[in-house]
Image (cartoon, rainbow, N blue to C red; front, side, top):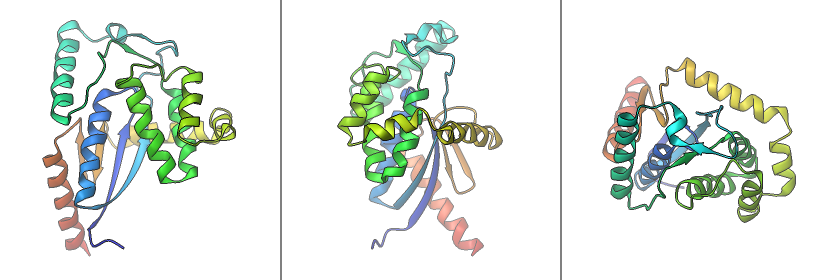
Length: 211
């Protein structure tokens, strides 16, 4: 048992989104204050990217906008004390998302181990998580049976989950990743820990007032 307040959070996220990694790290800090229950709503942000990867310059951003995003990312990474590899390429995250969805059936510990390693593998170690062999290696590292990997990439249920996740993102007015839903509040981007804590407090106050 815990005497921490219970807090439900839903997060729209993709493993090829570096700002989602920062958001994950910041959200984890709320565990010091709350009994946190997170629904990771996994959405594919660049479905047209090839599995072999492509330069981030081909994502369609203008150079000034891309430079601004990368500069912001560098600052956020320094704030969180993580050494990101240069973000020069993106990839297709579809198989990684399917694998993560399938891993949820093995329990929270397995899911979170894979969840963290997918972010680290792509964004810190600069390995391509669009490559099925990289994913199989990660799955084995995280204790995920080969059968689960095969089911992740063949069972229609997991494809349907991703479709439902995308529909939920659209229906709830999400405009980017990460997006946090805390109570009635929608927070877009890698917002600060202080912003997350304030939203959590408001959510619990509103919940208490409604009960």
